[in-house]
Image 1 (cartoon, helix red, strand yellow):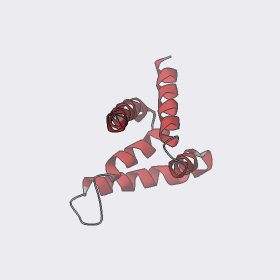
Image 2 (cartoon, rainbow, N blue to C red; image 1 turned 120 degrees about the vertical axis):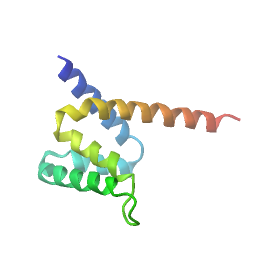
Image 3 (cartoon, rainbow, N blue to C red; image 1 turned 45 degrees about the vertical axis):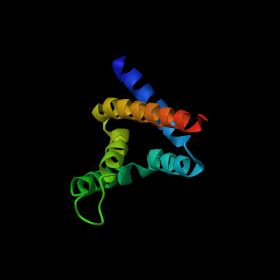
Image 4 (cartoon, rainbow, N blue to C red; image 1 turned 135 degrees about the horizontal axis):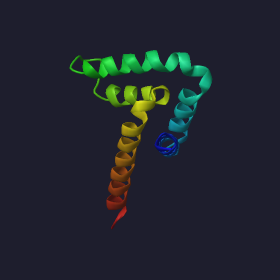
Length: 103
């Protein structure tokens, strides 16, 4: 039961992420496609490693959360913390947008 709820929350947050822009939607839809399952985990591992070595000029800290997000699609125990992180990010960005739009 908790796993179903976590799965639903993760899917809902991924859908919200996809609503950000058409470009983000295309990327999220592509990465979630079951045909790309063989690509996801190696890409996630490389992004996580790149995020860990973010002190190097080419790599950046942005790679770590992106790698964890992609890994959570295939690794069930990562879904709950990543879904919670996405909820926090959505709340934070929505709050910033509301503050910015106020006169």
